[in-house]
Amino acid sequence: MTDRPLILWFRRDLRLADNPMLAAAVATGRPLIPVAILDDEAERLGAAPKWRWGEALASFAARLEGIGARLTFRRGPAQAALDRLIAETGAAGVWWSRLYDPASKARDGAVKADLKARGLEAQSFPGYVLHEPWTVETGQGGFYRVYTPFWRAVKDRAVDAPAPTVARMRGPEVWPESDRLSDWRLGAAMRRGAAVVAPHARVGEAAALARLAEFLDARVGRYRDARDLPGVNGTSGLSENLAVGEVGPRQIWHAGMRALNEGAAGAETFLKELVWRDFAWHLMHHTPHIATDNWREEWNVFGWRDDSADAERWRRGLTGEAFVDAGMRQMYVTGTMHNRARMIVASYLTKHLLTDWRVGLKWFEDCLIDWDPASNAMGWQWVAGSGPDAAPYFRIFNPATQAEKFDRDASYRRRFIAELSRDPGPEALAYFDAAPVSWALDPKALYPRPLVDLDAGRKRALAAYAARGN
Image 1 (cartoon, rainbow, N blue to C red):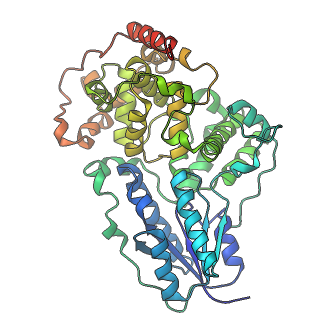
Image 2: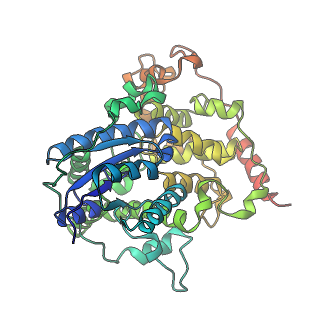
């Protein structure tokens, strides 16, 4: 046994409760040195996710100080930054929580190999998903390619109890020097949009747990139906907190199971959505090309349109289809978008505009504070037809009929589109405060005419899909 310090490398596990890595480290009784690193992967984050990660780091740093610890900030390539910390502190090694996207796996694998080659500790822990992706297999020993069988395989599987909340940590005799988080300027790319989005974010572990309790207490019973209505507060909103690890999936699962056992009508649907997130990571682990290429290789011959003036109007929420534009503007104002709207805006871009799904994926990657690489990639490919789905090209959402069904009173559309109201509300006007000045947008301008006729656009998409590969 040794009493040499351990470095705890935090990334997307910024919480004290249900953190297996942190709980195991505290149980050793050794001095612990928490660190966050602004490395190449973090630098590549889009504007909104990078800002939101910075907010999460600030909150977590304060939470660590409350239990007698500190979060050390270092900048540079992860392996070099860790090596410097080891040299400065005499640490025996590094522990971290696993991530499953291709870039993180490659980085973490290299770090682990280097540390072990030098006789140092290098240990990774679960905690970001309910089930490690390699532990869920079909009867033939392969991985699942369709969600429903995946759900059946895991719905009755035991999920580990949440790790105990850490209330105290032993630190080193001398804390290492640290960057100032403010010097990282993680919100710089957000420009004036950060001030608009900030009031809508619920940052930190305490806020995440309060959000979970509030949802289960007040809204889970009607979740099955209300989750599809963007004009009402019917979802949990926890995707924002899950993305940076301010709440653990196991915490959510067990809380949801309690609600299910108590008879909450929408609890199973809620749990299915949590497993949908797991399924996305399952696919990303087994088929990492889902992040960048058509998941179904036969779609490589499809003639997607590249970025264009039409796609730019889509980005700016100026397509003339109110349901589409409301979703795009909601994302700019709040940093998130209702899931029903995500499907509508993705379908419109990839089918009515026949634009490559990667154009939309990159825009979401830049604009969402709840950006999750696996869910984002799977969601876009599922809608586009190139992803894990049995009958993709028949699913062409009509924004007008979808609005009639899910936003019958037009409350969602009026909430975010100023041009549709004589007296627009604050969120509709906030879009013009968040949008780049170079767009020269005017809330008093006439609302644009539709880019395409919806019926003609649908027929064009069906024809293009039918001709695929011919």
